[in-house]
Image 1 (cartoon, rainbow, N blue to C red):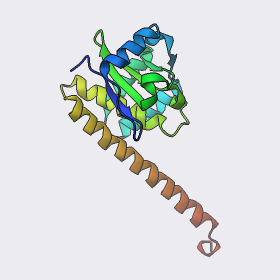
Image 2: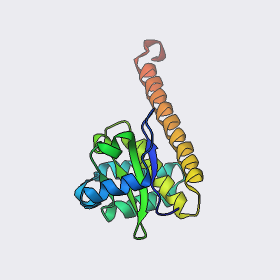
Image 3: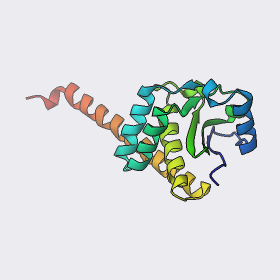
Length: 168
């Protein structure tokens, strides 16, 4: 299981095979040919992972980032169907986040980094790809719920501050 890739697929797209992903990486000259994902994006994901109680996944993400193992291939070929991919090579987790969402401000950046980190961590803990993917999806849903709650809290706060009847 550890040599298989796992994905966060784009809506309505099919997942590429492990062989196709590894061939694309090899044909590009290896993961080192892809841009490194920004420290800002990693820091946001680590903060969210810790808030979600996923300290192990946060540590794994920090370690992978420190070793430049979180990269951004172009969203072409096998990578046009996915937002992110994770796999283990030479005993180390590799996380690929497609270049079109690699910017920390992109709305798919944070959910993808969180998803891939949790999925990779759970696989290293012995989960099957399916089990790890399910746990990553649940955490992703929690992240979305937190984001919605935060937006609603800010909206409520702004409304209260603007409502003249609330001032005495």
